[in-house]
Every structure is written in structure tokens, then in C-alpha cells.
Length: 344
Ligand SMILES: Nc1ncnc2c1ncn2[C@@H]1O[C@H](COP(=O)(O)OP(=O)(O)O)[C@@H](O)[C@H]1O
Ligand SMILES: [Mg+2]
Image (cartoon, rainbow, N blue to C red):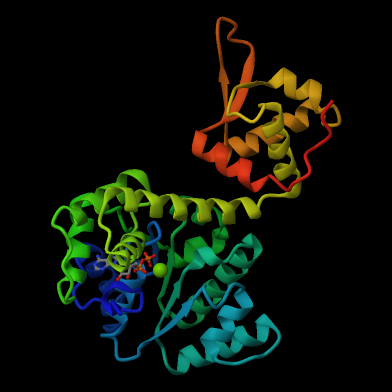
């Protein structure tokens, strides 16, 4: 119904990304003019317009590129199949075919959504392959990810890092005014009126209380138009629902022992998000060694679930609690059918 508000719509005008677009276009410019080739690592949070910008640029390149997305390819092997359009079983064979193909018809290789590749070995293999391909053919590569660039670079093998010499390009977060501008632009062609206060309210909420993504902005906008309800409460309700779904997805990927540990903490906290002394955890979860408990707390703390803290006079006595009450209640719901560890 509102095609302009969906992901499939490619905006003709991309706002606030002129600098980024200019830098990306230079890769193609240099490539066409046999100037020294340039390779990119584009990074920025999800919904910051990376795919939209690259699509916009590619549409002007007369097909002189190969675009592969991590949404369909999550292994190095699959990416090589995508590059060559062949289905050989070994990476070696595909790589030599890719070299032949790229020598015959040089072009820029774009790999979007690298973040979908979860296995570190796969990413390493991919970069080794890209390294060989680049050395043999001189064809530029553009890698796009929503993961932190420094973390990504740590995974790339040294040799590939030296040869590819990736230039990092960051898609910076939008501020509330920019987000409002982008959403307003999308509303322009629609025959649908919304109260004037709504887009500024929605934009500032998504930026302050959630992920700052235009994708989320468009989603909530669609929901509110459909319900014909433009109140702050409606936005809060939708935000709560998406945060809950996102948390659940994340929670389901936790190892079983972390889930059981969390289920046990819910019981030890007496069904409230209260401070639980670490000594109490050690005493009552008697089948877990103190070091193991400490490891579990560390891991859950680094994932933004728990927090260690002190209370009262005795600063040596350490406690743990859920970092926020909403996290507590989501974990409470999600662990309701998980058998906790044995509590003494
Ligand atoms: N600067 C922008 N101008 C217009 N639309 C944008 C802009 N940035 C993002 N969008 C829109 O937001 C949505 C998500 O953008 P996308 O490019 O898929 O993000 P990413 O690839 O960074 O996750 C798309 O529907 C896109 O049209
Ligand atoms: Mg994308």
C-alpha cells in the first residue's frame, strides 16, 4: 500500500550522504581510468543507508561490477560461486575460474552484509581469496558491514590487509533532524497526512531510545499509519515489541548453560530484579565452581545483561543484578520454561 515506505523502494534522492557517495564513486572512477585502484571497507550501523547508497552508485556503472550480498552467501565458497556463477565443489577451482573471469572482464567486486558471515574462519578464507583475486587481476573490492571496522580488521589475515589496503569509510549515525528529513521525504509522494508533531517525535525516540536506524523509523511509521494512531504511547508500544523480539532472538542464541544460569538467578533474586550477592550465588549453585560463575557473569555482563556492583559500606562485597528492569522482565519471561541449575 505504501511502497515508498518499504525497503524495496530505492529513493532517487539520498540525503546527507554526499561525502560517502563521493568517496565510493572514486573507486569506480579510478577503476575506469586505470588509476591506482582503491579498495574500501564500508561500515556503519544497520539502517544507515549503506545498501541504498551502493545501489544508487551501481545503477550508474553500466554493469561494471559484481554485487554479492551476505544475505544469500554466508561462506567463502558461496561468495566465489556468486562471483563466478559456477557451482564447482572446491574453493580452489572456483578461485581460478574467478581469476580467469575477472581478467577477461575486469570489474569492481562489491560484497554487502559481510556481517552475515558468522564464522571467523569463513571471513579469513574469503579475505585470502579476495587477496589472491586482487593480486592477480587488480580488480577493486568494496566490502560492506554493519560491524565495527576495527573488530573486522582484526579478523582479516595480515597478508590480505597489506595487499588490499582497505580504506575505511564510516556511515555516521543520523541525528534526529536528519532522520526526520529522510522520513519526510518518503512521505512526500504519499496521499496521507500525519500530524506535524509526529515525525520529530518518532525520530527523536528512535535516536534516543533505540537504534537510530531509518529502517526502524520506516517500520514504525508504517505501523502508525496503518493503525491511524500517532500518539507517543503507540510508538512506545511498538518500540517495546521490537526490542522484545530482538532480545529474544539474541537470547535464543545463548549457550544452554548461560540460559540455565540466568533461570537460576531469577529464582535467587526471589522474582525481583534485586541485588544478589556473588557469595550467595557461589553457596547456592554448589555444582558450579566459583571461577565458572565468574566466567558466566563476565560473559553476561559483556553482553549487556548483568552488571556487577557494590552496596552499602562493605565495598569488597560484590553483587550482581540485571542491568535494567526491562531486561530482567524479558529474561524472566524467556526462562520460564528453562530448568534452572540445582539450587541448594
Ligand atoms: N540517507 C538516506 N536517504 C534516503 N533513504 C535512506 C537513507 N538512509 C537510509 N535510507 C532508507 O533506510 C532504509 C535502510 O537503509 P539501508 O541502505 O538498507 O541500510 P543499511 O544497508 O545501512 O543497513 C532503506 O529503506 C533506505 O531507503
Ligand atoms: Mg544493508
